[in-house]
Length: 397
Image: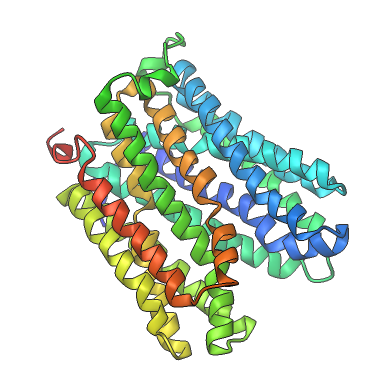
């Protein structure tokens, strides 16, 4: 992957957006790593603990709508800084939370900021890079999110022993530094230079039959994308522990291989998207996801599982960065941030429940049945993708 002749503005946009995704995902993942300590320390029930992530996803959807509209009306840079400060505030305040009700409020606040950031970042990328590079740059930003997960894992390994989960969330202050660099070095999109409010509206996502169907179809694809990710990352290590008798360290090796596969897949997907268009890129990766997810049921040793995990990560989450590039292309500039936020965060809000559904299915069905269901979802997404208006003309725009 090569990005030639980048301007100073483009370098700052790419670095800032990648860092933003990294810090956002790091903050969100803190809860995943600290959850067992929080349950033990605060004597939470399974239901209470389960609502923490659900409330975060709801906050992402609400924040996506609010900050998408704000970004499309007043500008990208101001809004980006608002979202980063908000999820940094919500994360840092968790250091002082000792009641589940307060935790719910803070996770909703964190979700508001994290959900709002995505569309703003994708709009900035689309408006600062030529069309032939947007897929690559969006994918680099998505890889930043995976690096954030790795940093969260390292921080948790150092801080959490001894039940110091409150201290882990103090690292939420780090994103504040990012806003200082963005404010100083990244220039606003030209149409907002005069600081004149724009007329963005949520209704513009559905104002014609073609756009209504486009929005709905992309939401279906986003739900499948997020459902597959949450399902695999939350439950597959547990499934494999039972099937192959893996230790926790063995499951960790599988997780690292899967995240590495995701990162490589994102970079490859971005290059394919820019060269061959979304129908080829999404088509190949969706079919590959369906095959590889079901192929996990054939893994019977530690190393075949690690290889299968890397391949599943490559295909299933390699597509994530491409959604921002495609959405930015299919919607006009005046609702670009709103479209990205609403579509992806709808996927997060609905697809995030896959971990709950899989947990329920595990009590009554085999792993082959569950993996077959996930494979079927990717095939449904493939069929839906073929019907999305405008994808054939992506490279011509």
